[in-house]
Amino acid sequence: MVSLGALAALAPAQQGSSLKTPLQIKYVARPAGMKWSKDHARAFFNTNIGSFKIMANDETPTEGTLDMVFHGTVLLSNLEPGSTLVLTGNVRKEIDDKEFKRQVFFGDGRITICGKFRSVQFFGKGLRAAFDGFGYARLYGEFDRNLETGFYWLEGTDPVAWSTGGSPLYIPAVGSVKPKVRIEGRGG
Image 1: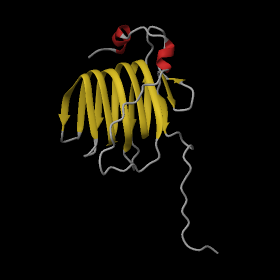
Image 2 (image 1 turned 90 degrees about the vertical axis):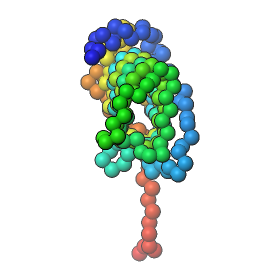
Image 3 (image 1 turned 135 degrees about the horizontal axis):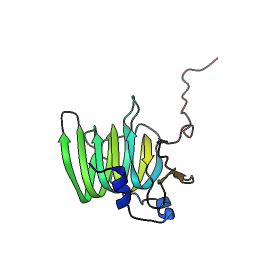
């Protein structure tokens, strides 16, 4: 197992501004028959070394399109049937546990997921990611050679530095979605 310190030494020295450049999301067509059940927002998160987990709440699966370029390990849990998973570059499937519905991928390349899933967890370096959907993320940064931990932001907001103790990211932001109220009956 590689330590975080060893990965930090391997992480390329990059200008801090490159960590604030959003990944141009590579969309794949939404799977036929799959409907989104929640409001979506677009989030970006970049780090030279770190980890994140995007997950669902207890009631609703995470949904949308997650596109990420990276070097490291990705654990995908409970990808719903009909969802799309596209691997490019030197990314290979290491584990396919059908009993617990988990898949582990490792390598240097790109993963694009479109659909619904329980969670996606990443650990590695050189991450540039974009998520257009609904979910909750926890981001854990590590210091690179430039003492940067990475940045995350929702579309239309300024980048925020990842915390080494964990940064929460609600997608869409809490309070940004207006409830849809439907009044039945004729009233009084």
